[in-house]
Length: 117
Image (cartoon, rainbow, N blue to C red; front, side, top):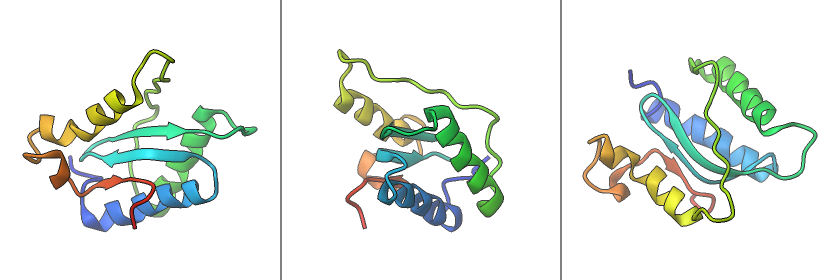
């Protein structure tokens, strides 16, 4: 099912990511929409909310406002000091290529970078 990787939903969904960056709720280094899931590399500033609470609140809001049917939970992997940020970023960006959706990483339009317009 292609719920996320379409212009009608991707644009407002990625705007919610940028808004949360602008409000220092999180910092999305990369936020990539696949047809049925997201892949993101996020940092979180100190907050009274846990990572789980922050993501759950975002999922709840987007479900109500944009009609997204999210999975109940999500998978969280924390980067350890010996893991490469660039390696994880490249892995995330290559997901559409591995799934055969595009031939090259640069062809996938449903991705947010913090300095993008």
